[in-house]
Image 1 (cartoon, rainbow, N blue to C red):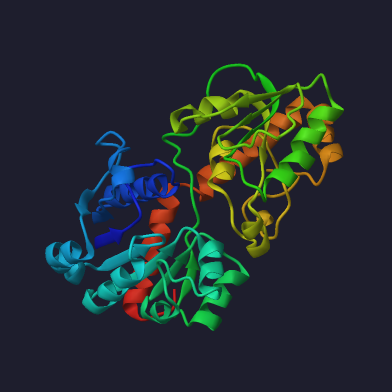
Image 2: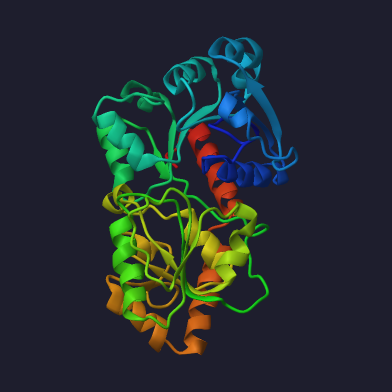
Length: 357
């Protein structure tokens, strides 16, 4: 296929999680023989933080404005077999309307921020998507699955809302050598809705086990957070250092944003990346978690500090390692970028044939 993707960014991973998703997906599509053109709006904050060229595959072109996009790339969009417009694309409503009026192939909206998008539409915030555009996209590809997909079809009129979850890039994430330094770690930027869960599942556990070793990595935590003395802080951790960080933990903690918990079926990329690194995961509970990992077998679920400490202090070492190995096997079998590329192929073929994906 000839595929055109208009996304937030592929050239810069600064301040966004879209670039790594697009890079892995485009690379696998190219490997499978597709011609992929990625179109990105040239904005100063990404221009100042470009990642090294060669970090991503396919063809990439920057455009300066909506008029520039129309003038230079109309023929590419018109001849494409599949055109994908991503969430948070600048002037996304205008871009989407132009794509729907220009493309001759299958059109799709790729929502990497589904619960956020739906909340914005409810309050009349049409920053990058408007309700009248949804029926015009033949596919609504969503980072969130489950009942949210039916809602998108029934309330917004999407012809086909389908899951295209985040994934892991096994070429970047895998086990590293070395012995664990910490009993439990957490990687994540501060969020006011995640902080109470982090307090309950990790910080209270640290207070209850002074001999334990804990670590929290991530920026923007306020001055007022009362860190227990046995919790180490890492202010910033570049993505290339994530695998070694995960491997240095006996267990890693996953905490889900509140809007993702409400929607359910919204796995974080951290889940797949940590599992690929061979680290057992302790996660908060949310609907749909069991469709990605089997609780008690491939992932451990905690609701309070007592349960967290039970895993840290009582789980036998052979079982700890077995949980990690089973989770890694699950990710490699179902949740890599190659799997997402194959899924996108199937959706596009069926949409082009007029059959429901």
